[in-house]
Length: 178
Length: 354
Image 1 (cartoon, rainbow over the protein chains, first blue to last red):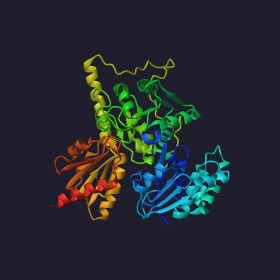
Image 2: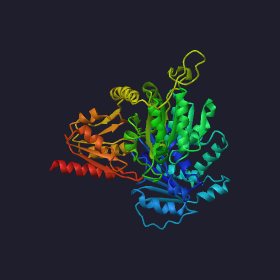
Image 3: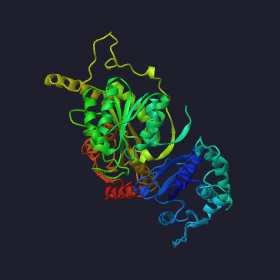
Image 4: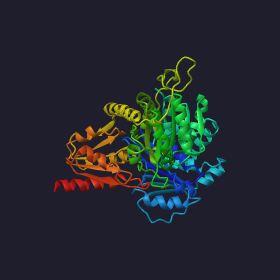
């Protein structure tokens, strides 16, 4: 279990990696811990990929840029290929096995592939593969209390789209049990 | 107290400015500052304030001049190249003794540079925000909470001393989200009265004039001398600095803003290895916390910045030859890593041991 988490969430723009990162950050805030969330906004973003760094800690956070993550969510091949090499030994790598074929040789990581896109589609959960993966990351790391995670979803879903709270919670559950 | 929320630094600057009573924002989009203007565009109308995207940075700063002359709390924001365009207007604000808040969410330079976080406008902010004989207070936040607190305080400082004030942030602080508690909303009728403002005589007083043109050299000389007396007051009253583990430090790191966060991580790691190292973090870059630095009993100083060493001379002036001042930095938008800073501290510590 990782109570202190330094995570990178990466994929194509539109896959919801920034949103999933915000859920982790809000969970940390709700438990009154130190939290930072930092998005890629540079040339990478303009090339169609998006990632964010999220840290939840009990100590004040220095650089919000995570350079050697303890946890990674990868939603496309280029993101997987890049961040799997930056991960700290022992890190948890959760990836969408529908979209990614691991070819790295690292044996010092806990790599967990689940068909998140298919799980989300079959359950008619639209584009919630990001939250399915987040559920699996929580299952593997326990970065917050279980109830906090649902509360964080409620905080992050825009007030104008309240119906998405339940589908996001369902996606979390499906990821946890995948 | 309001609820602790997760906010981007850029949004925190905007929200805090409105809570401080700013109802006139004039801007022009530029990365990595754009969320500030976007937030203003959404929330200023709800407060019956003015959000205006000007046709250029030059137009925006002159609109700030107009709103400030009318005695209203006003702000503009940009990133490095856009600030350069605004400097003529900032000099005019200083020359006309107008309070205003200018936010620079810095990116790598010179020229169009990069859009990544940088501290490359230190010299511009502290030495030359335009032509002529003037200073202005420069605040360097280091957290999203400080983005809110300093933007909020900047309006009072601007009004108290009748001066433009700069918040020198950077792309990292602007883009990142952290928990933040917002300060209390200021009632507009509770803001300082401005007897000099050009807000209508109502037939009851002579016209006020707001102007930076003084064709009589003696009059301008006298005006500048009066203004520098106010600068002396600012230097006495407004210095802000954070000290961390400096009491027994052999090495004192001096860093501001985003670089100070990274330096602090490196200092904690160095302390864990038994190295006596501390941090001086200037929160005001002008007035500069010379006394806090001069009071350190360190054997050496290490300046850490996200530029090519623009603050080194200020530290040297404060240290005044009492100890060597070294430098480590990354430029162009590269964010230094804590382990790089730690390596510099360790190397310096070894040299001191010789």
